[in-house]
Each structure stands twice: as C-alpha cells, then as structure tokens.
Length: 354
Image (cartoon, rainbow, N blue to C red; front, top):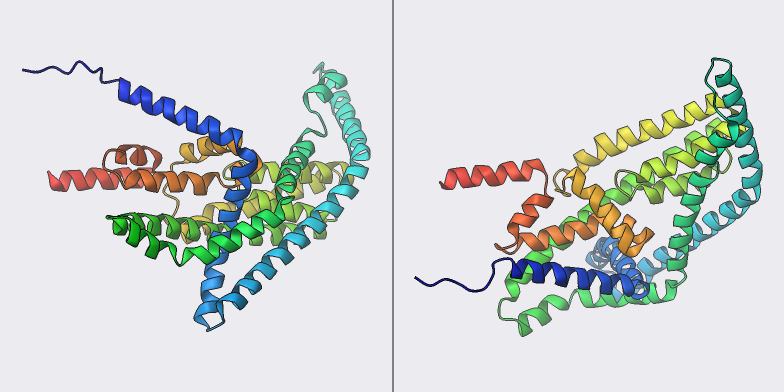
C-alpha cells in the first residue's frame, strides 16, 4: 500500500495564497480595473438595444452611434443634475446641520424632563448631523472621479460592443473545447444581462416615485434624492437605507417631524413594493445568491473597488458563482454561494440518482 507524502492541506493553502495575491493585485490596479468594469457594465446594458436596432436593419455603425449618443446624453444629464444639486446642497449644509443640532438640543431637554440625564453635546457627538449626508457625498464623489475617465470608458464600450460578435468565432478557431466555454459564457452573460436590465428598470421606477413624492411633500432637492435613490438601488441590502437617511434628515430639519415621518413612509413603501414584491417576481431565480452572500459580496467588492464595487457586487458575484458551477471540482463552492432553493434541488437530484 502506497501512502502519499504530500500533505492534503497544501493545495488548499496554495489556492488561498493565490487568491490573496490576485485580490491584492486587482486592488492595487483599481485605477485601471474600475473603469474597465464600468465599461463592461455599460456594454452589457447597451447590448440589447444595439441588437434590437440591428434586427430592425439599422446599419451597425449607425446603431452604435445611436446607443453611444444615448449613453453620453444620460451621463451628461446625470452629471449636470447631480453637480448642480450637490453644489447648492453643500452651500446649505451648514444651515441644515445647525437646525439639526438645535433639534437634538430640544430632544435632550425633553428627555431630561422625564429623568433621562443626557448631554446634548454627547448626543451630537454620537449622532453627527452631517455624517449620513457626507457618506452619500463621498460615494457620489467616488463615482464622479470614475466618470472623469468618461472618454476611456466610452472607447472601451465601443471596442467591447464591436468585438462581441466576433469573439465566439475566434474562440472556436483557437480552442479545442470552445463550445463548452461559450455555453458557460452565454449563461453568465444572459443572467447578468437580465439582472442588470431588471435592476435598471426598477431603479428608474424607484427614482421617479421618490422625486414625485418628495416634491409633493415639499422637501428640498427632490431631483437629487431621486437620482440618489436610482443609483443606490443597485447596491443590495443597504443601498436603499443609505439613500433614505439624508432625505429623511433634510425633511426633519426643513419641515418637521411629520414630514420626516412621511418621507420615511415613502421610502419604506417604495422599497417594500419594488424591492420585496416586484423585483423578486421579475427576477425569479436570476440572482440565485443567498442573502448573506449578497451582503458579504457588497462588503468585499466595496473594499476592493470602492463605490463602483458596491454597485457591481451582485453581478460580479453572480459571474464568479456561474464560473464555479461549470467545474465539478468547484461546484460545491457555487452551491454554498447559492440560495436554499438551489441546495434543495441538488439534494433532490442526488436522492433520485441514488
């Protein structure tokens, strides 16, 4: 009987070490990788429109110009709207902070009447009035710095869209088992494309509802909060919370407790209706990730790539999961990343095979 002298834990350690090295390298190359990922994100969203125009017998070059024109127009509009709103909001921010600090002082005085000894300065130090708004501003500034490379991003989008149709032919010519790789890639592209398309539709709906509701309530800068709601809806789990906090605080200092409560009801209703009812019905099993994995992927990709990583955390994790499913040796990792429905299906398959 032969015994292997090679410790069984070494391959796992080597794999983990390689993973750490790759993550460190990608994080170090963030300035290059992030614009590329954003280009892929835009290309995936734009590809269905491009294919639709080509199916309508629009020449490819003209279809490309139309799609790029729409992308540039949307980017310019968002930049102008966010830029002007943030500038005006930043000018008024000290006034809002002063009002919020006054409300906190009144709250501590009211609590002291009931024997709750609490210092106003201590409460203000723990509840920094501008912390939530500064968090949103930092994330928007992070996205703005990325969009500073808009020419490079658009150029990359053009090359991706032009090369997309020729890649399968090149792979079949150069690889012996290209069909299997193409099938796996097709699954990845289809799922990610469906997720991004549905997420974009629901994000637009969220932004429009927030703008109309806050404008009706009389909250300042409703367009800014609608755009933030649209963008932050791409961030799973906590994105809607981050988008709601500064708007609720502004309603509180501007219009009072009643308006703040109404604003909270608006965000809660929209998030329940769209995030918990409409999105799951539209997506079905498109995501296929457990809630814990979605949250951890948000933290991980946000740490690696910053705000853009948070926005793209679910598509990136979905891509990794589908890639793991394509190999029998790593399929168990894909099952761990998946939800309970997929795990039960695997158990059923094993039971029927046994």
